[in-house]
Image 1 (cartoon, one colour):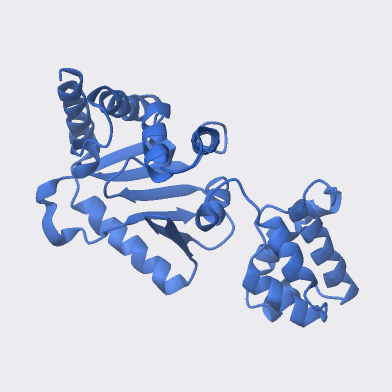
Image 2 (cartoon, rainbow, N blue to C red):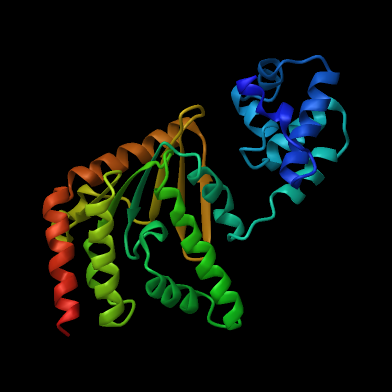
Length: 279
């Protein structure tokens, strides 16, 4: 039963669950196993299983393939649009879903503290600046959504989070001195209290060794291929092509190698926090 978790899934709990049950219904009617359907749709059987069990968000390109394979017109494409509605920005929604299932999350932050490590006050400053013309209620909802993401770091299936912060993240004042101090102390406390969180700082003098220049997240999973996600202002991209994901992973490894050790990084974070607190 284990990889057919979809069998006891109520199809009416969410559009995604309905998509999964429809996919299973069409697949079984066509007489395909998950592996056989995977072969026709150029993905693995376990990936098909994740759609059927509603653990993965449906993908537009695969939905189009499913419609072609089953001769279902645009049935899966329409269900896909419904199932992909999310509280997160559309470009980040897939990455936010994958975060919950990741075994490891490796993030490089060139300028801003990663969302998983942000304090409420720091998050509010960023969201408020990015959504300059939106009403307060939208800003608050976005802040709550961002902070809810952090629950992924606690609990029995929490991933290992390895974050590399460029020194600019510490030194560039995107908020008041007191908010910056609280934020950096918050990172240090998370590192000290959560053995699954590792933070390194890439110093200004690391030079060209580290050539990642935008926010980059690499994720691995227990069953499923690794992915990368890269983001700049108001846009982001989930990358699933194996060679490109591997290239991002190598870039990340080089960036880690050019960074201060975890201990030296923690000392620097705490020392900059003190500077802010004394201002």
